[in-house]
Image 1 (cartoon, rainbow, N blue to C red):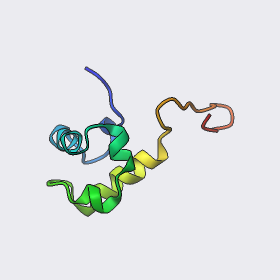
Image 2 (cartoon, helix red, strand yellow):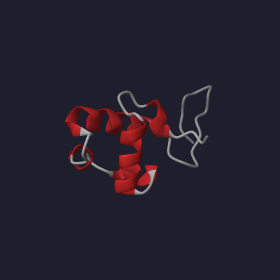
Image 3 (cartoon, rainbow, N blue to C red):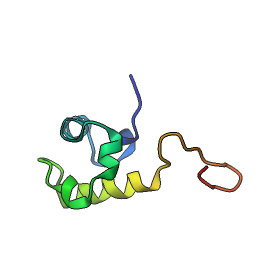
Image 4 (cartoon, helix red, strand yellow):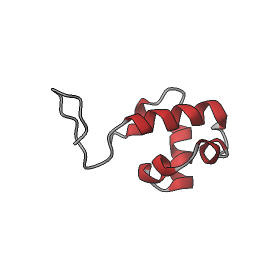
Length: 74
């Protein structure tokens, strides 16, 4: 089983993850979505949309890494 950044978002179960990926096509596209765009997806709503947006905006982008000594994203 592959791991995804979406796996660790609270209240985002398998069905909601699948719906998001169907609608947006990738985690990269989900990252680019606004809270209203996320909230418009059936089963998501404003509270979960905000959780998704906040969580993904705090995670390093693909190809980036975190310097564990400084916490800097490189």
